[in-house]
Length: 375
Ligand SMILES: *Cc1c(COP(=O)(O)O)cnc(C)c1O
Image (cartoon, rainbow, N blue to C red):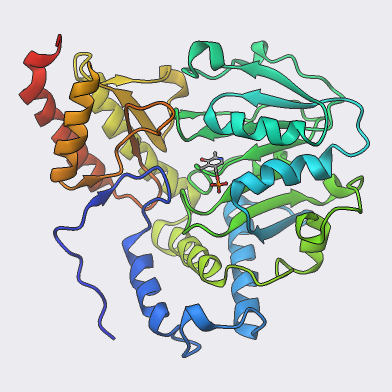
């Protein structure tokens, strides 16, 4: 069958999410809408009870295990409800029986969204908050006073809205770590076996919306209550092999294609990280060499490689920047509605050449508008 031509007029996608996916994956997805080659049926109409779909789930689980280097005592689940549902499922399962508060690090918009959901389930202690400093930096270790008997520590590895990213694993080894990695999952290697729970929806970095990957250390569930709705009970989901009810077959298949791309075309997470680092360097370099015209939102040492958030000298210039960028073919650059400004998201699927083109556009825009700086 014919595949779509890569249209010269297609926009370059810097969206914060759902994010850009690799071109070669999109070609395979296009073909699969018509018919998955090895099945002869459209991906939109294949039974989740088929042997083929069971093999998709098995291969995806194995690809994620390999990419993350997970030992045998971890489960890998594919759930619905987005990262938001994990804001509740985590405390529902892990707070049980603990009189001590769960500990949360409040570094930005998304870690803040997890707080009220956790408080519905039990006591919560915020061990650090960046709110008073406008979420412009991350905490240093000595600023975190962590208790040895908390049921768990929760944090967000990459704050998607503000553009803050941890370069280290937080917390104590004797307290289970829970991490929302939605916006930097599979972007770089890491010490993933130091976490008890990792969750990441697909739609930022690894697929379309509809599926959330949850990685769980087996022992973490030993005290979980048995009275939860089955859908929200990790144990029931594990028993059902992520097919507790009809799963998002399409989304799971696309994530499988993305993990194959990471493995076979990119060459694994270390290679992915090298590319992501070059992309981020190219853009931060454009900010840093702009003589203060473009200003990064956050402290240099906490800058995210996934989401580059910055401002211009005035709101008017920001509006004009977004309008010209749109005309020039750069899509999705508006900052999150909660903070405004500009945000360029550089997810795995975005090519270095796209970032270089954006950096070139930014230099031109600055040259054209330099005189308006003080306005
Ligand atoms: C986008 C985002 C969320 C929200 O995820 P949903 O799937 O829409 O519930 C949560 N956490 C982080 C870090 C995000 O970037």
